[in-house]
Amino acid sequence: MNFENISVLRIYFSYGQKVINLSFWQNLWYNNLGQHLLKKAKDLNIEQANIFIAKAGYLNNEKVSNNISEIPPSQNPVCLELIDKQEKLKLFIEQNKENLKEAKLILLKPNNEIIQC
Image (cartoon, rainbow, N blue to C red; front, top):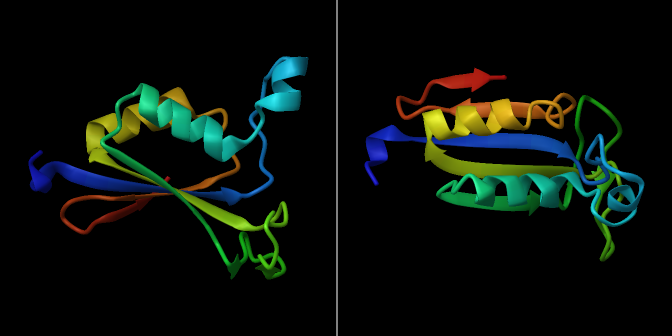
């Protein structure tokens, strides 16, 4: 892979954020946004994907959330980082835009330019 064409997409959302527009049964068993987006990235053959769960932090200037147990609080920050060509990352955003409405997206381009989506 040519490193000059590599971009990084960081998607920030809360640990408890759910996938939208699921059936009743899917909503019971398959509703975790992070796992859903990770699967969608794999389906698109994104070169690399990682989920980072914060030890402590906050989103949208809310109260600080501390992750001190095996299961993080629902408001705990999560980052899904995707690494691939910019065109493929933009396709990922387009295909998942409904579930990304409440997330904060930051695209780091090869020339160090930062774009907030």
